[in-house]
Length: 185
Image 1 (cartoon, rainbow, N blue to C red):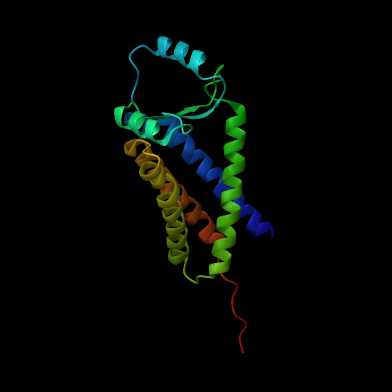
Image 2 (image 1 turned 90 degrees about the horizontal axis):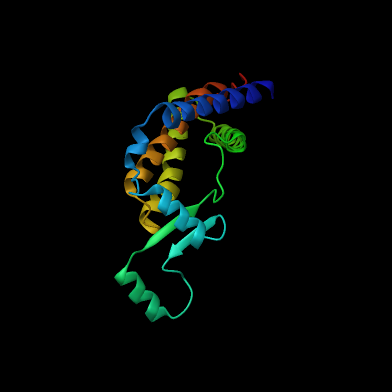
């Protein structure tokens, strides 16, 4: 139990640090984001037209299906995530704590999967962890680009981060999940 807790904690902290490097120290993933021309004016319009935090679609999903089809064809079509209408700190402590808790939960689940798999070789345990991350990233992160038309460049950076995170966790947890030695007969 102590060994499991140590592996999970080390994997959690390793991925947490990786997040600071990837998202904080590198500007590269942000190269996929676009900027509006007049940020102050757009912010004022958002406050005026978006009453609270949440996810909005333009055109909306209610009303006459023919009118919706026409509105989609004429555009613009937008998927807007409003996360802090009234602002928040750039490095919000609540988000940082939530991220740490999330990584802890993911490390626990990955640890359990690795134990269940019972793979005898370290490299296979690491490979298994990467495949779990790849499957999840394809289904969810790449799925966002396919199904919701969220910018593929942005989602591509997120997918790279996701798979690399599972590689890091696999490298750590692979060392803590070797199957128990079989008793000699």
